[in-house]
Figure 1 (spheres, helix red, strand yellow):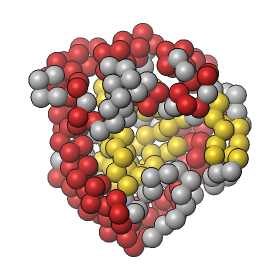
Figure 2 (cartoon, one colour):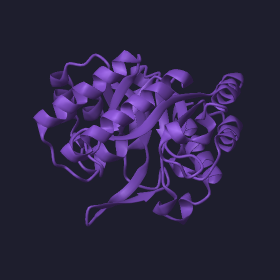
Figure 3 (cartoon, helix red, strand yellow):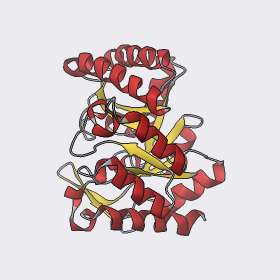
Figure 4 (cartoon, rainbow, N blue to C red):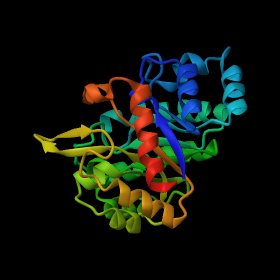
Length: 268
């Protein structure tokens, strides 16, 4: 498996700063969420018309890639569907320029919103997938909200019938919201997992998760990583956090170094 770093944890950094950090720690992937306090990837300075060639050359020279663009596209809400269609088209155009294979999409805006209008969501995700397919891009549905239940997500993907629609397994949400064992999640999503998010937490209070540094909570990360390694998973495991989760997440370089060390102690 390969290691990746979500820029959600360093929202004010330039891409050049992110690149330097991952190079120093031997991380091969950068997951784009925010850069220089801009959340819409096609508007980010590093991807502007006059900068993108320089950006692509920098990444290629360093053996670093952007495997996933984390869009804000939500396909489960009628009031957000039109925006999702426009966003996916814009993200796909950028993905082609960056040679990025995956774009993340979500059922709902909030991970603890468990509402699901199956027929509406299916119709919308089929439209999104059709757009992505025209660019040669694959969409990954994150395992949060109602799809923290991986059996439900598997059934949804099968019903959608799109050959470029897969799963982004967020290990924290399947554990915290669906109380799933890692093996059960992997068995349910057999062949569908293309990307993995890892983070740790200690519980849920009033619908809000209490996050903590990797290895400090009760999410079964060691078991998860061993299962992924044993299955021959050769995709990315991405570290994702927010500074607002606590002081221990406030310095991105230190947090990233801890994440890398934690994983390498288990799988190296």
